[in-house]
Image (tube, rainbow, N blue to C red; front, side, top):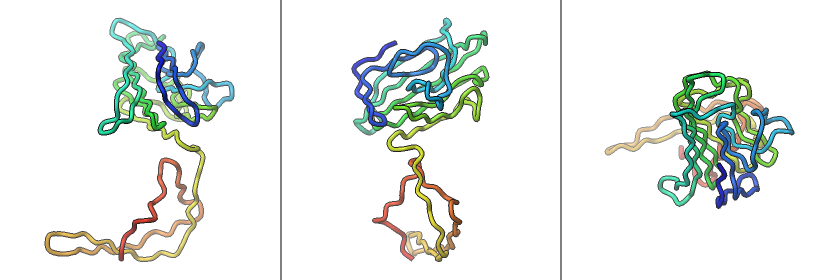
Length: 212
């Protein structure tokens, strides 16, 4: 299916047409052939919640919709592959979903499986940058009830190292109806490289803090 009329930005690229494949992918161009290792230069740009060799049977369907994120005006494009049968696995059933948000967030959600998703590609590649969760069962395999959340704004490889400092006791207070209850803790001192702050871990807001 070809979905037109969208305006969706990710990593500096605007998508106005998306191709939805029975084989468990959404892509800005029509794709043919088998699923690929997204880390390879030859791999196409693609959203791949479960890119493999699937087919429709009497119980299968592929549904698309444009909705609003609850409580906001942000739109998201939703594709659900319902009860898909994998070629070579007669009677198998895979249900999964891709959610593409205007903010650039991408969410893959997995429903019931009746087979092993060991030979598929799971991840996304945009403007040549790949975020791959699994290829041919390595290093992980998609499974029922799994949710994969990709934050596509900024570089996925960016890191901010936290340097070690002396531990300083910090006191927190919990207020009840009649009193303040103090809790005094000694933070752990981390060594160099112990902690990396990535795009999935926002930097703390320097305008707020705890008193003690």
